[in-house]
Image (cartoon, rainbow, N blue to C red; front, side, top):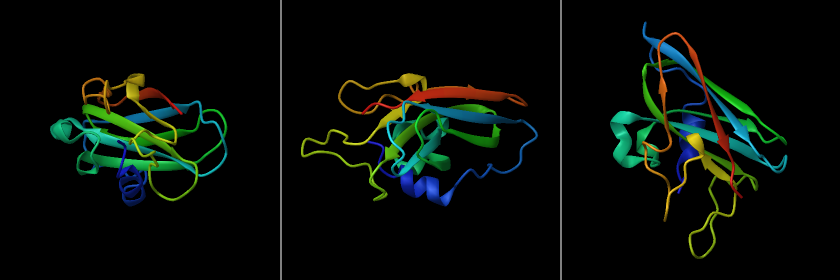
Length: 146
């Protein structure tokens, strides 16, 4: 579901995409973290890879924060103006994976921008996406579902 977020986040931890004169900042406020165990991972996907969302192939920036109760924030500075979808998960047991049960249902907290939900899997890119403009900070709130 949100597989690959850890690898993407660890390889692109809060790194800006190549400097663009038409860049904006994206702030992700993660709501509803239920424990201080593990880390919260955030993956930002670009619109040109909308077909692969939330596959790690479409990740252009990633970051993490140690889990804490409440609302950790991850900021991605200097993103080129574009449409981005955001996927988040709380790796409570620290194994670097989004754990699921035998039916494939998530056992750890997850969420998407706009609190988007899919019917039988992840939401569409469009449902979980936001527009990042130029020169301004855009904030998205993602509420985790456990």
